[in-house]
Length: 433
Image (cartoon, rainbow, N blue to C red; front, side, top):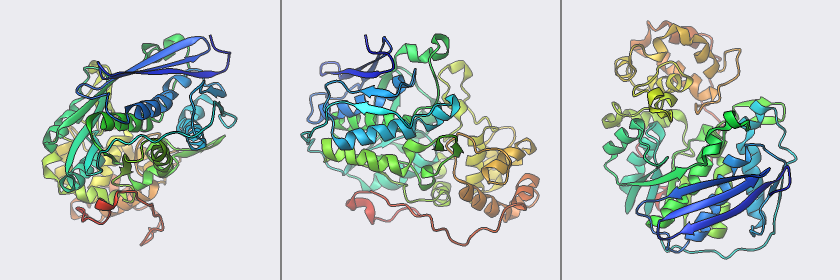
């Protein structure tokens, strides 16, 4: 049994025969186990142990949050200073929204455990073989369309619960024509019963966890690079809370990418991890997507499509959530009203007067805080709305015109820039936009 108020990293066990990884954690006398399975993966390949350990480190956050003590104990596991600093940032920044909603101050969080050097593990795989995490939305579709033709070999990466399939992912995945590498993540069922068992609950930096799982999957299947689809504005804070800024998309942002790359460089130096869209604004991504007609009838980013309970899962856009509204807004500058009405059932979000306040908030002219959703920043939303308002087929759209009339004068250029870490072989290649 652990000391009270201490989160313990207990063990990680790689099973070569079943191509699985079991991670065990303990907090306040409660033991949690998570199992990762990779059908078709080879867990005897070089680098598997390093990749498994990195996943073990990041996945612990899902169990830490059940009580969120201010001490994390790594036990006898040796980590570098770089890893401990990154892990602390991952917990503090990645749990920003969780802490905000639970009124927690994690500024005094500390990590204890032996610090030392580690021996790099080489996989021998090339960055010409790329695994692309795929969620079925605009961003990952654009990454696939632009990057896959430039690679020696590309595949989609999809992580889900055992046996789970989401049509919002599967339908556009089929359109890509690429093979799919699947990882099955069995989260400890006690976490899924957090409310019933009295645990703290809330948002975790799931993109960070899935990034580590993508690395494990890449090593196990012979891919030398992981190409994320995180764009520039994902680095911007969502809102400010009593303990600092909070970013719902933190693990999609630049700080996570750079920190994770530094950790990989120590453990798995020949695995490339980068975001294809890191230096791209939303309008560039929307313009690229607008030309990908084959995906227009199958893509879907509405969160209602991803409910774990199939009975609550929609197989169409809900049309009223902030995510639906943002996607419609982003595309409205580059796609016709007729095209977008064909995508959204019943009523297009930008034609729904009930969404006035939500649109104002997205564009930074509302009196409510920005939503904790994966949406673009205020400037991206303003630019998209202004462009839509100029279109001939939107002159009678009262919602668009009324909010556009309240927008500030937009700058002709923006000084927002972001570095990118695309491997040299892709860095200067022509993209769709």
